[in-house]
Structure formats: C-alpha cells, structure tokens
Image (cartoon, rainbow, N blue to C red; front, side, top):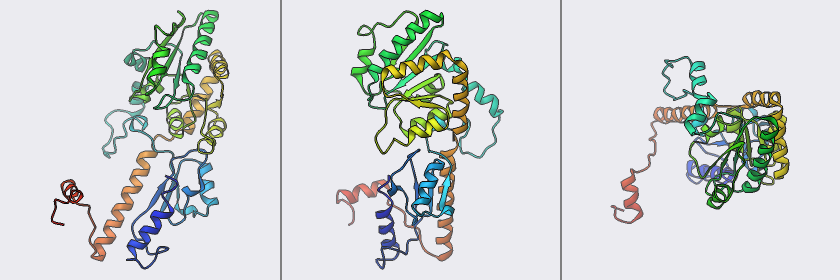
Amino acid sequence: HPLCQDLPLKILNQLDSHGASRDKGRETPFVTVVTDLGGAHPTWFNDGVDKCFVPSDVLKNAAMDRNVKESKIVQYGLPIRRGFWRFGADFTGEPEEQNEEEEMQGVHHKPTIRAELGLKDMPTVLIVGGGDGMGGIIAQAQAVGERLQKLASSSGTSYQMVVVCGNNKAAQSTLSPPQTRWGSDIEVNVQGFVNNMDEYMRASDILVTKAGPGTIAEASICGLPCILSSFLPGQEEGNVPYVVENGFGCYQGEPEGIANTVEEWFARGGMLEKMRDDALIAARPDATLDIARDLADMVLARKDELKKSGKTVAMPPPPGAQKELMYGQGPF
C-alpha cells in the first residue's frame, strides 16, 4: 500500500536501534512491491527501503524521480494470481518432464478451454465488471450484444459474448433470460462471481474491463486485447496510456463506443492478431515467482547474518499461544 513505507520504516528504525533513533538503525529487511502499473502515488517510493519492486518503465522512472537509488529498483512486472503464471512454474526447481512449448499449447488451446467452460468455439468477447460487477456492465453488455447480432446477421459469422457480473446479482439476473432475450445468431453466457478468470480470458478474443492494474497485467499474459471502459481518477488513470502505448488496447467510456470497437476489431482480424502479439510482448508471467525468490533470498541472507553474529531470530508464538495471550488465559 502507498501509505506503508514511511511510518513502518521509522518504527523499524526505532525498534532495531532500541529506541535510539527513528531515522536510522534498521536491520530488519524491508521491501516495497508496487502494485500499480501505469502510474503511482509518490508515497509508494522511499529510498529507505532495501528493494523497490516496480512493474513498468513508467514506475521505474517515478521511483528515481522520488530519489530511490537505481540499484534498489527491481523491475520484474506486476505480481498476479497463480492461474496466470507461466504454465508449469511450480517453484519446485525440478526439471519439467514435458516440453514446455507443447505443454502450453495444450493448456492454452482456445477450443479446448471453451469446451471445458461449456462455451461455443467461435469469436468471443468477454465483459467483466470486477468482483462487485460495477462499471455499467448492463449497458455495455446490451450494446455489445445488439451490435454482435447485427454483425452476425450481415456477415454470416456467429459470435459469442461472455459477461462476468461478479457479485452483482441484479446485473446477472437482468442480462439472463427471461429478462433479456438475445438474438438467435449470437451465444451469450452470463456468469456471476468466478474463480477461474484465467480460463475465461484464455477462451476470449477481446476483453472489456475497467482499467485495473491486475486485470490488465493478466490480460497481457493471455494475449488478450483490451477495451478499457472506465478508470479511477489518479489511481488507475495511468493504466490507460500503458495499454494504448503498448499496442494492445484502447479506451472507450461509452457503451456505444465499446460496441463500435468490438465490431471493428472482429471485422478486421489482422488488427486483433497484431494486438494479441503486442499484449504477449508486454506480458510478465514470471513476475510473482521472481519477486518471491528475491524475498526468500533476502530472508535467508538475514538469517545467516544473525546466525554468524550470535543473535537469535525472533519467532512469533504458535497460533494456540497467540489465542491464549489475546484472551488472557496464558501465563502472562
């Protein structure tokens, strides 16, 4: 969190110096993992940290502008959920038994994924509204659905739309039969909250989403062109140029504009293929494990230092002891 740099560093200085100073004396390792993508609040950056992990060139420059030494800045990418890691990366260090290229072709094969999800094997647009299903998802889905029906009727090609409403049960109900009757030339699949977003992304050709950093990073790993429908001012605003400048999406704030873009991209297949390639270039599927390895190395190095100096490593009490202390039932 951007507010968790300055104060924690002062507290650690005071603890490690036994109260002598809040400005120096820290020995406990401290790192920052910046989880914004195309822009970040200045309080993310403090030169007092041991390492500052950033996901993009923009944030590396932002860190240096805030006087974080370049030697402390590490650029791996944005940490994301396990389903989006490079396939086969299980952090065991054991060699893969199967050729990774063959393995990835099997797991990322669109027709196979679509079949497993109960979807048709046809050009697919995925509309998501985040965990809470916000962002005008009903109007977006209705506009895109109507446009796909017209495109299907005129082109003779069938299309598919998947709408993930998150916890917005009202939106899920509104977009599902009998409240909404979709055209006969398109397939529509309306979901609530899902835990396998990686599969839905890999089954799709276009993503409509708000400009959240995690979703954008996940989409790039899946080679999924993005239409950004909204952003939080300040916090997410910088994510829009990140997508546009990396060549795998655009911003459209109105449902009609989103529908127009979906139609254009499907009508021009070469454009989608180019954006897919650009998304994969921007992807950083190994970021989570790379960051975890660096953190583990730092912890082990600190443990060795303490061992050589004869100091003990302070360990937290076991869960049972913590409970006793909380409720006053222990020896204290």
